[in-house]
Image 1 (tube, rainbow, N blue to C red):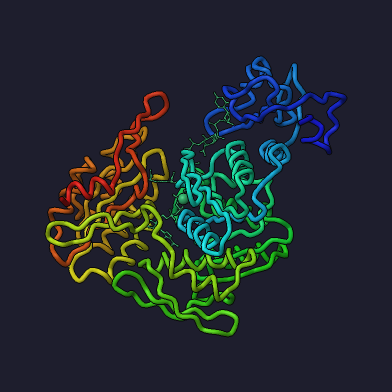
Image 2 (image 1 turned 90 degrees about the vertical axis):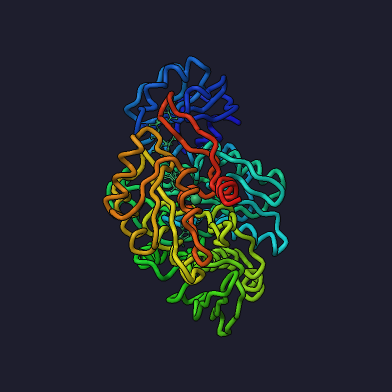
Length: 479
Ligand SMILES: CC(=O)N[C@H]1[C@@H](OP(=O)(O)OP(=O)(O)OC[C@H]2O[C@@H](n3ccc(=O)[nH]c3=O)[C@H](O)[C@@H]2O)O[C@H](CO)[C@@H](O)[C@@H]1O[C@H](C)C(=O)N[C@@H](C)C(=O)N[C@H](CCC(=O)O)C(=O)O
Ligand SMILES: Nc1ncnc2c1ncn2[C@@H]1O[C@H](COP(=O)(O)OP(=O)(O)OP(=O)(O)O)[C@@H](O)[C@H]1O
Ligand SMILES: N[C@H](CCC[C@H](N)C(=O)O)C(=O)O
Ligand SMILES: [Mg+2]
């Protein structure tokens, strides 16, 4: 493809080389590559422009003040956005129906449920997010929730080539802030909730919300739809952004108008829901426990309806949802008969949601094993301790991806909010202790890692991933 095809509105001053590939990392540049040079958190990509050109870059998308010699300089004050648009032109073929989900918690669950519901409706569907790229036959991991723009769009284009017509993806706040998931037409965008996380990156809750609102004010297509969980403190701001943009609006939740959650009652293995929609009441047996899973299921149903699904059929299909990997996954039963659940709660709000989900199922105590990630938001740690202490009966604080930080300091920060907790650094030992403590009527919840397959220790060149899977460890220790 010619450079001018990627930038039809830019005067390239006669230069119109063939572009054979795209890269945002100079180490991935080959002859014919278009290089995106961005100012990042750790590096200034502009410093690598000479190396990229030496490796064969034919064009560089960078700020006007960057110096580019030996290749065309596509100057833009917002080079990440310009590069995203050009990348979408390069890959150009995408699933006809793509939707995005943002929110502090529930993105992975919602995209996965959306994929399942589309599949039940007979479509060739996929999801992209923390669990990787999932289709009905395959799963591949990408490392980040929202991969970089080149990986993201090339994967989307690859899915389209395989015949995928419907794709749901997670738009993390980092990804939105860095324009990592855009360019392709997004028919509908969903919001799940906003609570404390990632303040290390965004600084304030306002800036964090602003990053999420970009999905509605800029990323979703002009005639697109917003699907908004109605019962969150930030729902109003999202609805206002959607209205300001002139999007079609579907609201779901107890205060929702499109799918109104009228009643919810736990059953032994799930919950029964009453939903009011289009003037009718629907009763659904959702085979998943917890208010939070009902919320995600309704947002997913909203996305399916937003993209043409029939309301009655979509709601009926909720009864056939399969559990999402690592989200309140029942991993084992201890010798004394207590169930052990693995959940991905790694924010204060998620810990509350997971414990609230399990409480009605425990006639005895709720026992929680949890930690907090290193090189991530530090302010959330005591808050996680506090909510855990308020909602669980017995706490074990342990390690969860210490990365480049001293794990003892992370544990101590959590313990500030939970002075009564037992602190056991080694995660296996902590899980074993929780299991040993559990009586017949108790429930053990191992939170924070969900589907993850390793403990991330160290940073930079020292970084190692030590294999660790909460589900298998829980099974081994319960046996
Ligand atoms: C804070 C953050 O989001 N960082 C991500 C981001 O970094 P950045 O743009 O600030 O990049 P940088 O490392 O400063 O480098 C600047 C530029 O120079 C380039 N570069 C850099 C070094 C080099 O030798 N050559 C080179 O060309 C880089 O490719 C980049 O374009 O872009 C990089 C390239 O795509 C990512 O690897 C990196 O993810 C880091 C590893 C990370 O840990 N990100 C986490 C926080 C993250 O994004 N998490 C969210 C999940 C949130 C959630 O769901 O709750 C996610 O979407 O996964
Ligand atoms: N709607 C929700 N409301 C509150 N908590 C939730 C909700 N959905 C999920 N959670 C909690 O958050 C955890 C993570 O859920 P999920 O993986 O779906 O979220 P995510 O937004 O994709 O997270 P990440 O930002 O890490 O990608 C769950 O295990 C649960 O504890
Ligand atoms: N997407 C989240 C995942 C956190 C998972 C938890 N196990 C941790 O390492 O903190 C993040 O990158 O902040
Ligand atoms: Mg996720």
